[in-house]
Image 1 (cartoon, rainbow, N blue to C red):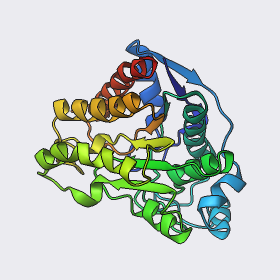
Image 2: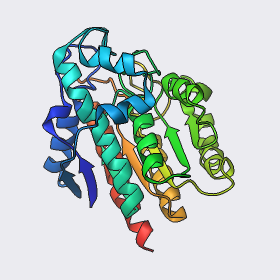
Image 3: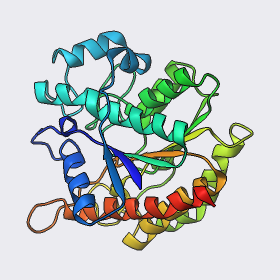
Image 4: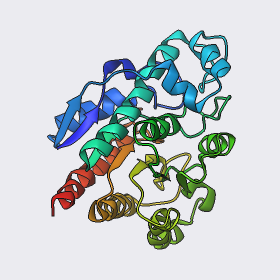
Length: 289
């Protein structure tokens, strides 16, 4: 089974174009309804100390006091209260995968555009970098690869890596910087080199991979336009099974996804996240072979 680190406090109503703040509850409910092999696990919210490793302390304080605009461009108390839980979910998935091996899931979004001291594009705190730094605190010398297959460039992740001088210990694969709409064939043919580069970067396999399995790469996504449904299935299969065969633990999250159906629901996005979870359960078995 795939451990899924979820608490209801992760969700918030932002009345935004982005569904990311409500997606954790919807995705987990969908996986359970569809009978997927998930084990929903509680966790501790991220602490201020953990978040301030990746962000300016003044910025963190300003966000949590609702004095600075969050990634949705408002100062919502509901959003601020959800942030320790969305970030804590990613931290819990990462540390679990490192300790126990295999694949773990954080049903979270809204990370990779959050810079050291600035929110943007529905992202407020960079849970990827907070999780990576927590892993490095628990295991000094750990080498971590962030494989970001969201449609968009994780500029916030790079900003924090460079600001804190972490380029030697954190590898960042940035599909959103390399591909654009209509480049699906190029992306699919480049995946082998992308994943192998996470081994070449350190001269060995990374100790942990944080995988952003963005649903917004889908060809029908209003902010996407890259891969078909079948190609996205192959994407997840290739990423998750490759690292499983190499024995590298993976913590994945949901990242972007903005499609709606005729009824206005995000069922098309949930279908893609369901497909990712199905591939994760298949890949989990390769760690035992």
